[in-house]
Length: 250
Length: 270
Image (cartoon, rainbow over all chains, first blue to last red; front, side, top):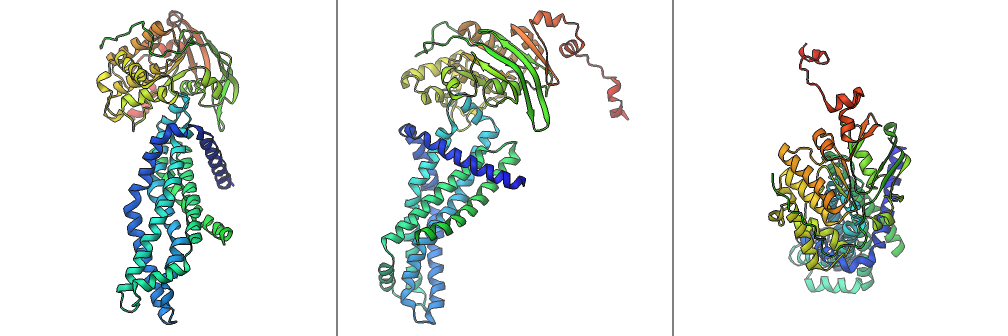
């Protein structure tokens, strides 16, 4: 019962946090520098890992598809499969998972430490809403960088698939044929749907990270626990929301 | 001891109304779960007064201070600043209340200068050049201008306390709350902090509430001193009246005897 109450409290406080943060939107022009800093942290710094991960996801997808589809003589559709999978599913999900693990955990640790060491209380006594200074810039930053990271993830994944098709002997599909199939089956709508998913995932991951950090009480041990909790809840939220958004967009 | 450099000149872009405020605590009680931390506390702090709250560790001093700062809501009773609830945003807009935390609570990712400039910048109190003057003036008053570009992690405990007080000063507060301002400090630095608190009150006629278990500090700078014991307020007196008190709890708290043959510690020897 306590666990259910705690989860409901977390959901409620997350919603309140989001509302309070967006109530500070009129102050957005004043926090542009902070938004840029957070966009750099969340976006630019994530580029190398997004590139490596999505290249290999595209490659493995093409390789696995090659193994399965050669028996049916359907190799020509590998481009379509990799293209659709990356654009609609793997691109946004993988970027969101990376965001939760790399950026969300760091945000939770930072805010939890600020909470535990009274820095958040200091802001409150200075009549500076923590939602405006600490939460809103991070939410806006993540909304800015998620589409960029997702498109990059898609493109890198597609190229990873193309390389595998071109150079792995038993597939033997040229890059031209691969991209021809990809162009034929992947529409702008697929890419757009993926970006919608990425935006929702990014927003939820950052909200969970901020909310978990700001709800931390206790000492250093609780900071560690908060980080774990934030990453686990984010992963659950990403995969749960993925199902429902896919159903809505289908 | 480092000389303090106060001048009566007002801070740049001073607010029109910065008169000191009155703090009223009525029938205040606080419970965390089943544990009662404070009960039936009533007191009134007059504008411009230095009011010290003393008591042994765990007596609820800091809890009371957090409520006066509006960081928590009381379980019973009320706290008011000039008759208004300090936890309401409207009250925070109306009165500048600064809390000097025991740990300093400086923003670790910001330099000392940026820590001080945050409040005027966020509230757009005045243009940036004037904010700079205001911050540098506060740093000069506390004799820490050389630390302007350092990060809090590079400062000693005493320096951090000074930066926290300077940050409060930049706010031009009408009420300053000090939570254990001399804890973890050597006697010389403690005396400097005491001097700063007293001088701020004199120069800027700010209402000050100091939570401390430092007897010398409390009885030297306090206009009145309250004593909390086991979650209850047992006395609010002028320092001289407290010194002369025959109440055994007050007397033992203010003049503890150190007896190394105390029978309470027999078990340690066994």
